[in-house]
Amino acid sequence: MRRRTFLTGVAASLPLARAAAQSGKASVLRYVPQADLTVIDPVMTTAYITRYHATMVWDQLYGIDSHLQPQPQMVDGHTVEDDGRLWTFTLRDGLRFHDGEPVRGRDCVASIRRWAVRDPMGQALLARLAEMTAPDDRRFTIRLTRPFGLVLNCLAKLGPPALMIMPERLAATDPFQSIKEMIGSGPFRFVPDERVVGSTVVYERNNDYVPRPNGTPDWLAGPKIVNFDRVEWHVMPDPGTAAGALENGEVDWWENPPNDLLPVLERSSGVRIQDNSRLGTLGTAIFNHLFPPFDKAAVRRVILQATSQTDFMTAAAGTSPEMWRAGVGFFTPGTPMASDAGLEVITEPRRDPATMRDVLRDAGYAGERIVVMVSSDQPVQSAQGAVLLDVLHKLGMNVDYQVMDWGTVVQRRASKEPPAKGGWNMFITGWNGLDMTTPITNQTLRANGAKAWFGWPDLPTVQTLIDAWLEAPDLAAQQRIAADLQREAFQQVPYLPTGQYFTRTACRRDIVDIPQGQFVFWNVRRA
Image (cartoon, rainbow, N blue to C red; front, top):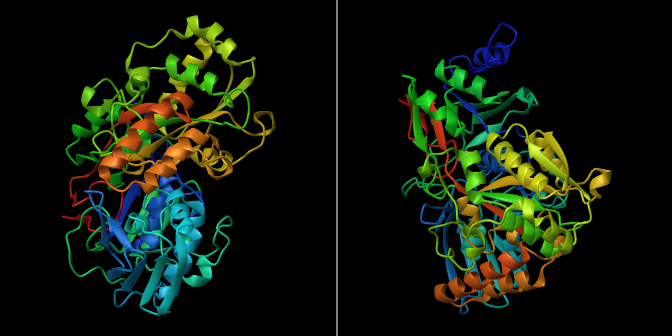
């Protein structure tokens, strides 16, 4: 029997009832997110819930479309001169921040600079930057020391941290300190007075927002038309509660129902199921390279050889073969950088963990306690965590399996303290396939030590190939380098790829035109 602990009883139903009363006759979209919003600054985290929040409050210079191509969004157009070294961008008319101030070229310059410090693609841009200026309110320029083919990809960067345009005074905030206000120019305004931690996040339509006047809505590109006065996020305590709320019409849209609940929802007359994205999600188990035993590539290789992507994906997405894929490397299958280079290490029959204990000891494991962080409110991650725990136990490792909510994982993974002092050794996460398509957007592949993503791998042979990819003159050269990079990554194992899985989203039947590919809240409407 499915539990409905949140909406049964008078007291439990108060959050939704109170929200409905506050909204009056306003058109309201009630949404169940994957997790609570714990970080509000898009530069400060790679958590997807923060990205969803950011796309509502702020806007982007360019929006990525379903073909992975940047399309003008806040920008009206651009010119390129001096053999690709001088880029000049002109903003659209009518762009204003929520406080009434116009969006100016200097706001864009400051926002790009702050984002670039934290993002690997942005760091590559800064390494080639001669100057970035705003000659007037409607323009900004980027002058490079040498041509860089990813300039527009930088300005359309959605894979977290996403590049969002803030007022200059907010963008002047240290990129390692969170902003204190949420003033954007996006289609919605955040409502701080209605924020209930662990329960509710509320946004209201930005009536001053001017959508792009032309183009076709496609992922983050094209016009952003807002059809609701309010969007309310309601965090649920468990999947059963969320399913019951959706079936009863107490919420309109549930981001990520577990696959094992899909048959139940499909039988509900008022519920509709639709696919999320052809790129799916890539599972990852993250090693902390700072401390034993995962500071040793040989130990990481043993874990890789002892695991089965099929086991991880069956646990994550069920037995239906169309819902997951094993034999997945370091780039999203079906995209230009993906290949079968080095895949034999994961496609050949796995080595029995119980027989590999001696191999693990010889690799350098000395019985250290392994702190594994697993999210309790992310069912897919929790399921994969159970598979990882089984593998580590069979290898004879001393595992301290710590279960916590995703918000706590997001905060704690930044700790560089030893595992015995509040740090960690491994955690499970997943990445939208969009963010794993290239060596520079794949955050977990970055291997430049202190500048790398959480886990901080310092693997010069891997990082050298990433840097070489950035300098590649054409697609063919990029693909050759990406194949070499994947082979080397299977030797160095910066992280453990666990496969690709696909999810579906669920909504009431009267909710239509949900954008494909990304969870955004424009263009969706009630029929």
